[in-house]
Image (cartoon, rainbow, N blue to C red; front, side):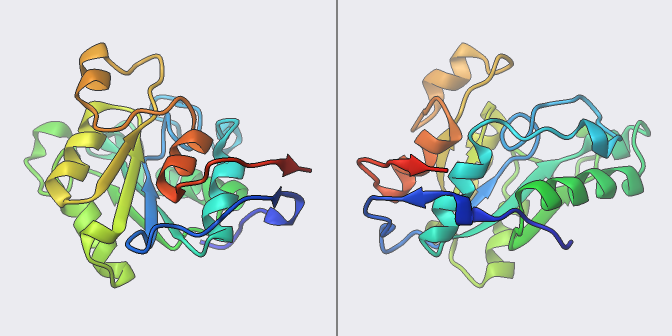
Length: 197
């Protein structure tokens, strides 16, 4: 998918050196990178969360690769077509890319597939596509299945809660941050940042 936004309008005055082991950060799509629109089939409804662009720019400035790993059960449920999901993903790519890897599970929860989160297969497959061991990857999501998938895959994880995140999921998460920027700051070990547009 072609696209992407220009990070040149963001200037970072801070240590942007990531921990040696971190080479990629993968993100959940709905509720994490973009505002959650249930079973979204309309690219015009794609709206990045406010912190998405600066968070992604910080990672790319640090030489960290990025990707998206998302359950899209609307396909398996017959609510969405694969083409509609691809069109929405293309809009996410246009607004927030370029991403280095995408992995999408199209199956319904009862299909018994190996890829649907909280199973780890999509994260492991994304790691393999990037040529990385899982321990060199972090995953950022908004619900418990994201955390469970990361744990099962052996990746680091940060939970960025939303209104749909259950209190028990927040308590169970190893790291919780309020925004994507705070999540990325944690992963990069950035103590202070000034952003100038």
